[in-house]
Length: 286
Picture (cartoon, rainbow, N blue to C red):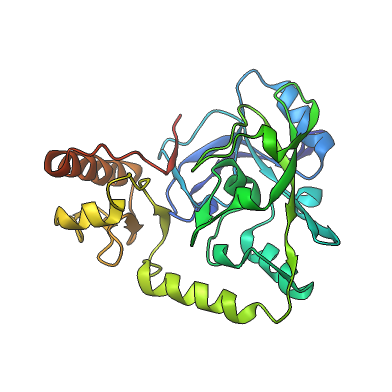
């Protein structure tokens, strides 16, 4: 259905929009193709909307959500450059951004290869990989507040820290990244990063990536593994035998199955190591 808000889908199942393939319906799923459409959506509803990026670290209730859900499309999925500065819409996925870098011989973002997330989501959580964080490259963002006001925010005002960005209640629409000219083809480095991920992470089944943040004591996957939890199953959900910090959907997994395994992990790790694991995955419920 088309409207002044852009395209709207009613009671749209969300499972197919997530990498874990779990999730009930969205009462209203908006596809905002322009800043004007986004501003109208943000100012039209009392409830704070949920932003759906690539769905790569998302666990959605089987009941879905009654809150408005927004997916950025159109202009907010475009990429351009001016010298060493890339201007990318928040809806751009990392593989698209890396293809742009290859085409324009720009280097710096290769450590993030293989991450299935969207750029806006990665900035919001200040994603990191191989010793690099997204905040190392961000110079500024553009965002819309809940009142529909457009803001340009320099990186120094975002208070980037590990897995943290100080952007409460605003929707990122565009990100500027400072990269470098590549003196050689970067495809080899991207391929090496992806191959390393394939060796160490479980890509056989749908997942939401790492479920828990790494505590200061040891990687979460190592603690979970030492508790003997690899291979523990509930319904279609399985603690990966490849990477213990992954819970995979082997087929037909439900929200309750994943929630059960998360609870077991937290309890067992605390009982053995007195470490309280913090979830990295974002949950949506009705």
